Amino acid sequence: MSSKLFSVFLDLIFPPKCIFCREIALPGQSVCEKCSKEILHASAIKCIYLPNSGETILCFAPYPYTGKIRESIIRFKFYGHNEYTGFYAESLSAQIGKKFPQELFDSVTSVPISAERYQVRGYNQSELLGKAVAKCLGLPYREYLIKTHDNPEQHKLSEKDRRRNVRGVYRINEGEQAAGKRILLIDDIVTTGATLGECASVLLDAGAKKVICAAAAHAL
Ligand SMILES: [Zn+2]
Image 1 (cartoon, protein in one colour):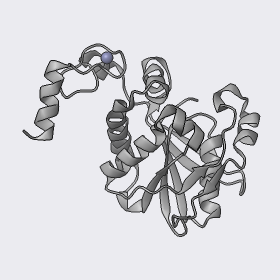
Image 2 (cartoon, rainbow, N blue to C red):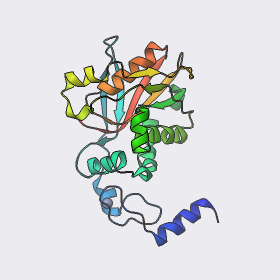
Image 3 (cartoon, helix red, strand yellow):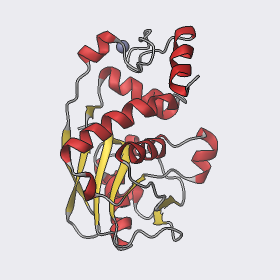
Image 4 (cartoon, protein in one colour):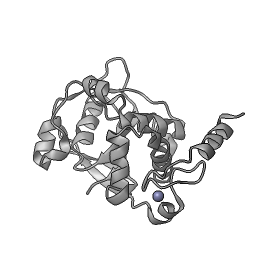
């Protein structure tokens, strides 16, 4: 039995739950019929400020971080629902594919979490998303960035404090070659852009030729 057929077979025994409302979805589907009509893309392109150069770069995000989408991303991020990766990665890749030519990028990376956080949570949803987006777009995934230590959670802070909070917590992974590369940097949610701006600055300081950011959702 092929793996695709096997997963449809499993879906018949254990029907999938809609990632947005948690009602039963059709076999092979991540979203129920009601939500697939209700939940639409509301793409946003944000400008991300780079603290070192004062320049800005683009961040693309297909979904608004509100209502059922917000609840779904919280389950994905904090409550172990890493099976949501496929849906968000495919959706994000399809939208990126419409906005940018594939040849624009050499590789994909993501915003890292610290080793301590990784131990506790067991996964990093941005990394799962980044790896799956790389696969969808046919690009290599590279771990260019390392988060050296934990900092207070960004969503509890003001915009000014968020920028200060992320300063110096990311560094380049010396084992990877970011210099000269055009990089697609992935995160789960973009809010003020402080985290993405800091990560992009580290990549550009290491010689990256270009950085464009993308996130599953935007909280504006
Ligand atoms: Zn639903």
